[in-house]
Image (cartoon, rainbow, N blue to C red; front, side):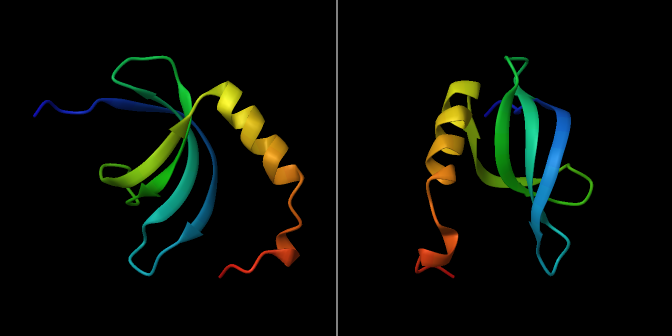
Length: 79
């Protein structure tokens, strides 16, 4: 299996931090020298190891923002 190359172009922010120091972050990342995309996933503190996450394009991010702006978070039955 070939190694995955990534370049964190910009850190947008951290959503949470686990007990072992891993942070769920929103970043702009270029994967395998491709066009950068928005990425949400857990990273170790050195950004050497990562867990599964989600990567979205600019158009998908616009749609996500639109959908989230219509949600009243207080009405959601989630943890």
